[in-house]
Image (cartoon, rainbow, N blue to C red; front, side, top):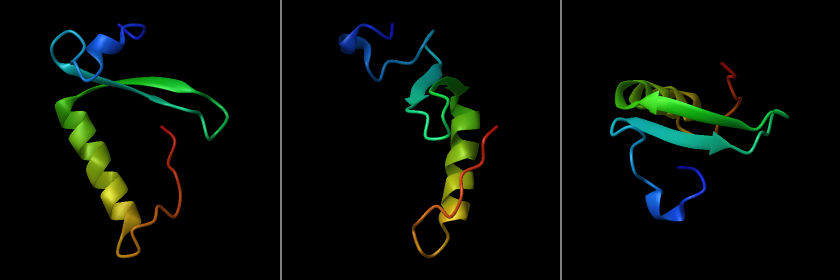
Length: 61
């Protein structure tokens, strides 16, 4: 799946979002999330950004 550029944006197993982090904390990572958990993560980032639009810190899970 990761090696086939034709499948970019296609849900893994028809239901999961797959994305990667370059590893700004020193650990490159591949994430697999369902739509619900991805929505919660996006809300968390939006709350962190606040009015400035900038992320003041990063939370590692």
